[in-house]
Image 1 (spheres, rainbow, N blue to C red):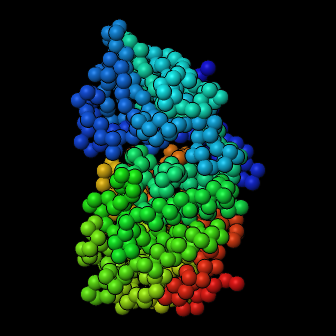
Image 2 (image 1 turned 45 degrees about the vertical axis):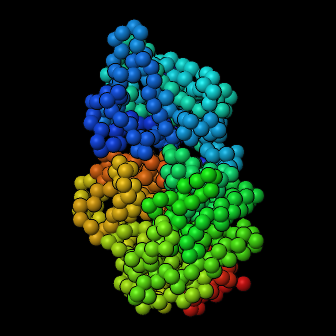
Image 3 (image 1 turned 60 degrees about the horizontal axis):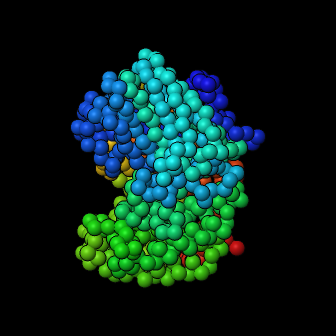
Length: 594
């Protein structure tokens, strides 16, 4: 049976925050065959084109490859993969891992429960269809295989079309609960091009505002390695090769948030288990002057600083303040005490530059002071100063610039503090920079919303109202890129800022924008894409742990505001005596809530 695209698309249109919303059909790309390597020239054959696994991955955050004796005839073009198989003995195609890397048989994909296992059954989407877009003439065979290469399901389809109209194939969910690979093979004599493979998913009954939190959290959870206690910086790399300490802290906090009654995507017991697993792993990492590394790698089973990275004050602040809030939310007194003890062991006396400002940290040797400091106004500086207060020291506030503007107008800098603390929504001038933070954040948000209508009024970003000049992976995922509204000729949007700043706008405005982004393919069941070109011509589907954390916490705060709930993260911030005492640095009247 062939179901055409328009029939599925009609089912995919979501209602906004409907209390009685039932299951709906949405789409998740397995892979859109885009060339994402700047050095890759369209038209090169697979045999001549070296695929870089660091930037070549599926939209699921997994790896892929090619197979068959006719592999030499495959050409990797700009927006499609093509092959012409003239010989009767030639067949060729591609394999795609569905969970983790292909060489890890422990990671499997359940078509009946497609989100990570820690998410409750009631919130698990079912993958019930495969959609292929192909042109040309020939026969395609699809297979789903187990980690042991046992055949779980197969189906063949005929392609005879000059346009890439989608062909839909239903999937037997009961047979596909322990899948590892989805393969396609072009049979001898085929002359075909594939532009994309997509899964049709039936979402559970969940309102759109809660679904935003769920999809963002599921995206982040794909980077977590259960039993190890750290998040991979990117979902498509191996566990222990490049793990992110700040993202790991954010994951503990995000898990606590989605275990709250208003979400309930994870059980309270599971959230406690994850928090303790993370805290134990963080405690085992060798530190320098009490600072945590930004990135770690596993050496003989032990996480250690990744060579060439730093022991970081801001990443230590992100991790420990996340863990404190999570412990407070989950009423885990023992974990909270251990985290506070670790914070108090930070030796800030050896982390101060000559003018009294706090350094960015220490180099990977653990002794060389980084000559850059937290002087600029914004959330990173605020979190580092709060960490110093938590450690029992008083920061030098005279070293901080008091202009109320983040460095080069970079979005996340104005919002990161408000993922943790409600205080920075105050209109009262703070005692450190004499800034009305709410007013300053609103000014940043307006400049973000105005940037493309002013500089590129005909762009997709302008017409669709998309914004987010922030920081994250560059267009190809090969380098870190920092944007901002103070910079000219900006072309790359990092949409995590939309959720980070969401509580500054009417909730309906943000949900309407996310609805548009879902239809454009930029918000999927696997969460927001990493970046979007301002003209809408391309995007990067990379699953990044840190930005996923920003998105999840932002989505949670938006949900709480939209439904006028008691925000559990902000409640924990008010209830924790130690955090209240630290906040007196900025707001001397900050008091713990009775």
